[in-house]
Length: 127
Image (cartoon, rainbow, N blue to C red; front, side, top):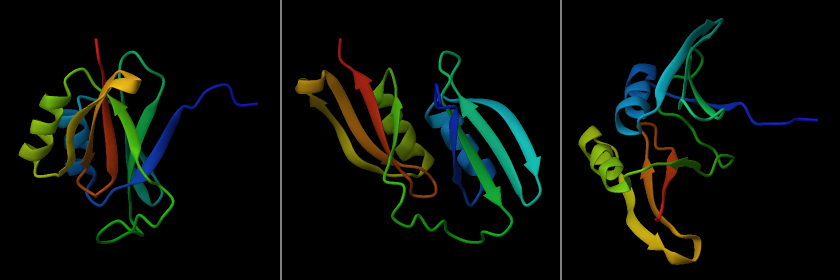
């Protein structure tokens, strides 16, 4: 039986641009680069979590990424949601939903998109 989730991988159209977004805007740390037949990959994460995001630019995928209907959104936690939203806009990506307080869950949430249009729910704990 599985005992933890290690990482998940998403296809990106421009590995360097996406890596810069996740590093510079969201503050993730680049932990590893991998070359495999047909793809270049970057693994990003934080110092204090096992969860990782793996970005893959595949040779067989050209042009915009087709999201299909399988992946709805990613969740990332942060300490300063306002700063994240400013960074998203400065990077040229979209803040779909401005930060709002959800008292029932003691959080502030915002919805943003990454350079390939993946929806990300950014969450900041209150208190």
